[in-house]
Each structure stands twice: as structure tokens, then as C-alpha cells.
Image (cartoon, rainbow, N blue to C red; front, side, top):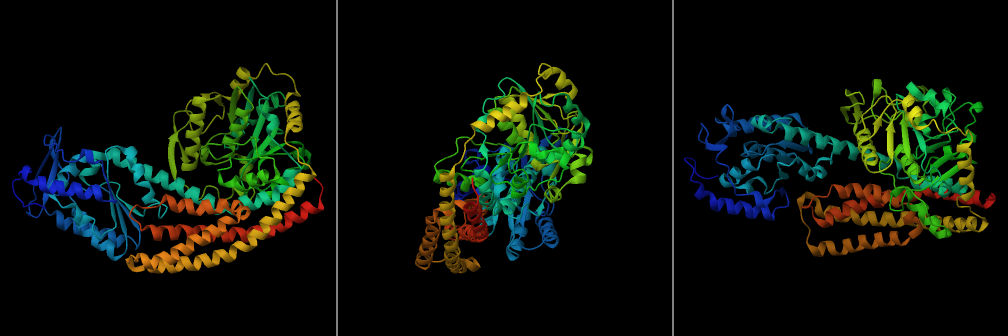
Length: 639
């Protein structure tokens, strides 16, 4: 800090240049350097504090200049606030603070956090304030030896740079909703930053939970389902079959009970495709859709009355669907796959390529839920208008699903909405309704789809407002879009023709599948031993980095070379690697999202690789019994 007194800003040039050099070389400071060095002396003024131990800054307002920092004892107040933060929070957390200001809080907060191994992320929303700071204070004092990262931006879109640092604990434990003067002047920026952090943390946690839940199910389900896949057909025969016509998409939101009974008027005349989670409501109202669609690896079969005739209704299924659903409808299934690069389909594409029948038709589902997959199928069927019902994407009436779902749900639905980040959005009536982060993403994706593609009509009669859709009642939608369709057997002909044009498998395909799975089994039996050896080496490398010690290259060269060699051995077992690719991706990719630029490459590589190898070992061990059962089933049964 420069000497206290009347400031001659020309004398601060040397410190400014020193700080800019430091910022340019720092991997912990995220600043647009081109905006540094410019003082706004019209709207701000700086002067010594009353105790003559620091400076304070004031900003011009309609009521005159207002202080943004303490004008009395900023060091004392910074120390007291730092002690309060540390006393309230536990060891090893990430702390997000708003407003770096002149650094008085951080003079005391950083030493305390170093003792308990905490980290600090700071969002400074004002380049004006920061430009005064770097002329008055040595910024290196706040970074050398401390775990602090500073983001300076008056553009809230740049908050995305903060996000990978906030999810290390899913959501940073401590952040300040306001910081004295900062909240007065930058309320909008701080609120948007907080919401961005919450949104990102909620989505990342959801993704991580999904990976953790599914990583062993995706490949295992595909292996177990394969005998049924060989007995079924693909969806190629549906392409273009609804050209110029409307279709109804049924989801299982709480508003479904309002209008589902109207589907009887158009059943058989207009193509009705429903999310499998709506089956209990459809059964209760005597509605038989033309097709159900299910995608989730943990989905199990719903119990319905035998008289409902569910086996007569075709199912479109992801190849990684839960086997209970496949078995419940084993003679009336159509299988599809997501693109090869998506984790849940890696093994499916690998098998098909081995058999010699690579996928010619696959989904590019943008939202990740079953309704988005249905929309994609309808788009490829060349539908003209999609009429959605039950697509609340919100907790309409405090419920997350239709009444019959809630009373007849299986274990699949019991904990779907635990620990979700909640927020309020506009509903179709212009009021506010509660939703969560996952629903919000779906709202955005549907809005984007409706803006650029097929006409989308939202006849849900409740729930969140989806941009670019026509919002009307189902009664109005039927009268407007469906009155000209009178053939009661129209939809049955679509299904019948699609079944004759899908890919068919023969005995030679079955034998190739048996050979593939036998070789995969051999490889899966070998991988765990390699993984154990690799993890021992990874542990040795990790020990070298403990206690903040950076190992010498000669200490690292041999174990790092060995670890990379083991990963190459695992990758060389191609069939096993394809099968467990989902697990590798799930754990390693999440760690990659948290990479910090200042981490030692060797330690970071070791951590990520260790996560992936543990997942690979576990997946192979889970796959072994599934492979044995599938091989036996394929050998003993005809295609």
C-alpha cells in the first residue's frame, strides 16, 4: 500500500505496472487486462480512513457520495468478520465472497483459512473499484501462499468462469448474499451470480448423481437386454410416417388429470405416444396410447390390470433400459440408441459394429428426459404439430406427477426429487410456480426446439410456461388440429408397417454376439488385476505430493510412466473398455470439470486416472455375471 495522505495518482504508476505484470502471470486471477489502469475519477473518490490505517472509497449517487468500505477501522472490522466466518464454518470448505474491494477482509481471512485448509473464491463486480485497488495495494500479498481465486467482471455471463470452482462440495458452503455497500450498488450482478452458482451446482450434482446411479447399469443392462434386442426390431420403419400430421405427446405431470379423458375422442385416429410414467393415469381413464416410450436404466415395470392389455401396446426402449421393462413387453418392443459418443450407448454401438449391423438410426436427444426423446422420434417421423399434455415441468399444486403415478408408483419414482435445487418460474397463467433446476433445463430445451423446428402446442393446462409454444386447452387443440382425422385404424397401420421395415437379426448375428460376449468376458476377467496394480502405483504418486511438496521430476518419472502404461493396458482390452466406457467417462469427466489451472499436472492426472480405474474395475466385476447369463441364454434360445 502506498503512503497515506493526499494521493498523487502519477506516483501509483509503478505499483500499477507491477500488479498488472503479476495478474498476467497469475493462474488464480481472472481479469480482462485490457480494462486495467483506467481510473473513473468522476464517479469515485478515495481518501484515508479515520484511523489512518487504510483507504476507503465512495461512489457518486443521486444523493451524493456513498461509502463502499468502512471509513473508520477497516482492518479491525475485517478481522472481526474473518473470525466470524471461520467460527461458523468447518474445515476444508470453499468460501465464495462478493466484493474484493480494498482487501481488508482478506488480510485476516486468508491466514485463518490457510490454517484449516479452506479455499476462497471472490467475485468482484466492479472494474472501477478494482482499478483503484491495484494502484493502492500490492495484489501479490493476497495470493502468494494462499488458496484464493479472484474473478473481476461486470458482465454476469462471465460468472461461468467461477463455476468449476464452486462444485467441489456440490455447492460452496459459505457465500455472502450481500456485502455492505456492494449490495447497494451491485445488487443485480450479485443476485445473478448467486443464481448462476446455485443453478450450476444443482445441475452438476444432478449429473453426478445420474452418473453414480447409472454407470454400472448402462452397460450391464445392454448386455442383459441383448437376447431381447435380437428378437426385436429397430425404429427405422417409423421415419417419415407422420408427414404433415399432428401427434400427441403425453407426459405424467400433475395437470394430466385435468384433460387426459379427452384422448378417447382421437384414440386410433391421431398418433398418441406417451412417457411410460403416465401408464397408471392412462390405465385409470381407459386410454391406450399407440406407443409408450421409456429410457431410464433404473426404470422397472409398472403393475397394471391384465385387462388393460399393455402387451398389445408397442414400447420404444433405449437399449440400456431396465430389464424388467423389457421382459414385461418382450414381444412388442422397438429398440433405439443414442449416438455412439454418449456414455450409455458405447457398448451397444460396439456390439452392432462387431456384428456388422451398425446403427443407422439414433437419437440426438437434447434434454436428456423421455419427453425430449419422444419429441426427437416425432421429428424424425416428420410430424407437423406436437400437442403436449401433462408437460408441467413444475410442481403444479405442490405435486411432481399425476395422481395415479403418486398412488401407484414403483421404487423408480420414490426419491426422484430429493435434494433438488428449487426456484420459481412463470406458469402458463402468468403466475409463479415452483420448479427445480432439472425441470428448468427441460423448459429451456423445449423452448429452443419450438423456436426452430416443428410447431409445438402446450395443452398441459398447468405448469411452467414454455417459450415459443402455443398455449391452449386440449379441447381447443383437438378442435383446431385433429377434427379432420377420422380413420380409427390409422395409427395401427403405422405400427404394422414399421415392424416390417426395422432391422431384423438372424442366426449368424446371434453367433457373432455370442463370440463378442465371450471375448468381453475374458477381458473383463483380466482388467481388475491390472487395475489393482495401477492403483498401487497411483497411491505411491499421491504420497509424493502430500504436505504440499512438489516432487522432483526424477521421483515422478518412473511411477508416472508405469501408471500410463497400466491405463494403456486397460485400453488395449477393447471390448471391456467399450463396455465400461460409461463408467470411465462418468467419474473422470466430472473430475475434469473441476480442474484448476494451478494444479500440478502429475497429481491431477493421478487423481482423475485413479477415479476412472476404480470405476472400470467395479464395472468389469459387475459385468462378469451378466455376461455369463447372457451367453448361456443366447446359446440355449433361438432368435
